[in-house]
Image: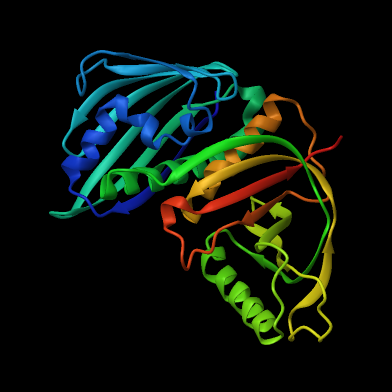
Length: 312
C-alpha cells in the first residue's frame, strides 16, 4: 500500500513540560482537538492512567466519525501514539509529537503523521495530506493558545438554514493566500471606513468577506471585501467600486473568538453540509460577516457569522 507522511510545526511561549502535559493527558484533547471542536457533543471514552503507556481515548460522532488513539511512548521531548480510524473508513496511522525546547519558557512542537492508503485510493493521498495538514495547523494554533493562556477563544454554534438577502456594498476584490489575509484585510476595511466617514455615510451593516473561489492546492483565494451601504453618490476611491451581493440560501454557523481560529467554523460548516448531503451553490464558497469591531471588542467575544450557500 502507498505510504505517506507529513508534519506541521508551531512555536509556543510555554515550557516543554506544560505542552507535554496537554498532549499526554487525553482528557485535555477536546480543548484543542481540530476535530472534536466540530462536534463537541460526540461520545468520548477515556481509558488507562494519564500519561502512561496504553492510555488513550475513543470517540464516536455522527459527523466526525469514530476511532481511537493510544499512547505508546512518552519522553520529555516526544510523544508517540497509535491512531485507528473506524468511520467513515478504516485506517491506521502512527502519530508523533516532537517537543523541542528553544528556551526555558519557549518550545517548538512538531506534529507528525505516518500512514498508508490502499493502492486503488492512491489518488487521495495528496488531498489527505493537504486537508489533514490544515487540521493539524488548526489544532496546533489551539494547543498554543491553551498552553499560553489556559483557554482557547473559539466557540461554534449552529444557527440552521437562513436566507441571506442581497446587499449593495462598496468593496474591492482581492486574490491572496490564507496566510496573507490577516495583513491585507484590515487595510482595506480601514480605507473603506474612512471613506464612508468622510462622506458622512453610515454603513448598512457589518463588513463581510465573500469567498468567490478557493484553490487550496495553490493556496489562492478570490475574495470580495465589502461594506454594505445605501445612498452613496460620490465615486468610490481608486481600487474600490459599488457592487451588489446576490441573495443566497445558506446554512449559518457562528464563531465566537479570535479570527485566527475561523478555520474551525469553516471545517464545521463544510462537515455539516457533507453529512447532511447539502449541495454547495457554486456561485460562492462562503461569506464571513464580521459582526463586532475588533478595535473595541475583546478577542474572545468577537462574533463572526459564516454563511455557506447551498442549493434549494
